[in-house]
Length: 144
Length: 402
Image (cartoon, rainbow over all chains, first blue to last red; front, side, top):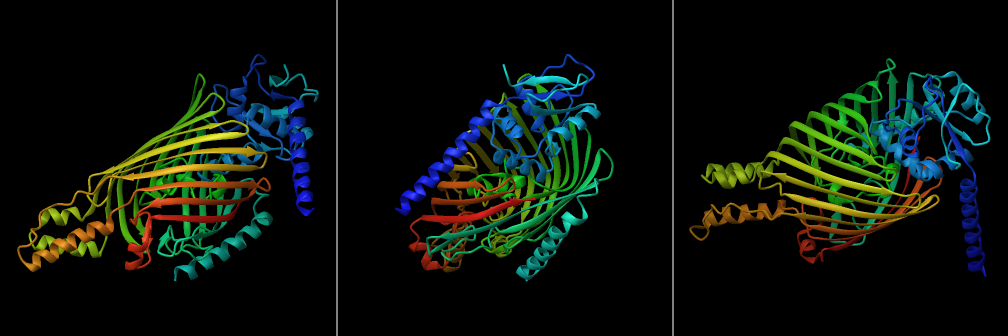
């Protein structure tokens, strides 16, 4: 009996994890930059490289949301292509070998949008339904 | 002595960690971070030890605590220091990294000071268990070198070329310290250390790494050096020279990691060549596959180390007189005792990321290999012959970063 209780608990947990992933799958994000050139567009590989501390042709400073946010989970799933734990593992390697550091983090979408709006050369990701001010540029979006 | 010193450093670090959140985070110029690990291991064979593990459960081989301070002098200049407290008597606790960084822009990064040597993919973060899936990265690569630090300069250039985002690192320096193996420390000098590392990310999923390192090395093996001097005095200069741990080494490395959201595949290969008889040529590799279930990663690794045969100098005649026979036997016994051994292993492990900065791990490794300077060490003369060249290592542990 106890065995079946444990088994059903495990199944419920796995179900919850599965539904978490499907929530992330059903959401979209937009990647927004504060740049002079409004024609700049990035592809998924370039966005991924920017937020993983690698170099691309455009110089932009990435800014992120905290790990526990749904928007970040969507961004991880659809653009980075890694789970949050593997991203944290990667950044521990980069930080403690002196190669690079993770992007600066803002506590929520409002603060992130305020920061991006006032700092030239920054880039961040937002839920697709957040209104983006005209002076910012959408450089990539996950929805088709 | 070392244990007492380590305990003091450990207590200082713990105090620093506790006060870090109150003192330092407010100041933009100073960043405090750190990592630690608590690892228990047990070897199921009572004839040998392996990487310090025996058939008694111990937490002391790999457990450690480290704190890193980054102080930003200007927007482009910073100083980094990493203080590490280790519970292993073969390692010194103290300053592990201490370097100045100059980063004029996102393409260039220069460092000067005391740093970890970036031999392989995880060499410079070997103490940061949170950075990889294993508790013990494959010993065939990650224990098969003589030193892990250098004092010198390094320059990294990051670039983007089509679908490739890469970085090339050049470094040069020296190392003067001790090398520990088989419970003893030997004075070691590494000079003219020069290395190049090439890292690339191709597309969204493939990471490639290639490196080359060369250096002059001199290791004072004390009692072996004394015996070499006796041989030299007796006129057997070639035999004496063959027992000298001095010369040049070259290390070649290639690696690839393919990462998808729910699995990864990794491969890494290295080859060490040297012009001394006592330091054998070594080729090692591992292949790893991992499956990711949300915060749990299950992984399987096969690793192999192949050593070249040591060619003794056949200079001392045997059967001429008892004195020469003794020298002949002593010479060959010395070569036998210092030889390395091939080693194969299969490791099955699980990592559970319980939070964004804490992970729990468990793994079991099955090893096959003989007694050798970098593999199994017999606990007694009789144990050496009783050892069946197979052993299982069980480990579990906790990794954290802050």
